[in-house]
Figure 1 (cartoon, rainbow, N blue to C red):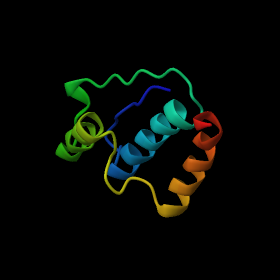
Figure 2: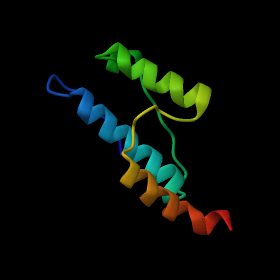
Figure 3: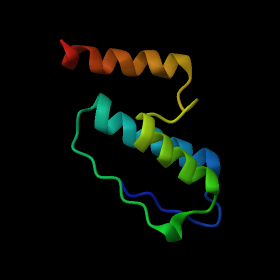
Length: 80
């Protein structure tokens, strides 16, 4: 899936797209490439999220606790 930033693209859309990429890469164990051009930056918070992924391996407060539990279940089998 390619993220397409438009005039109506919001921070909520960004967060949902990042969640989808992380679920695909981790939960579904699919090879994933994340390409993001500087022309797609509508909000500085996008860079903060990418920085969190690169430096800490996570985006703070991205997933609710129930979503986190679901993802843990998805990857538990692969971890064994």
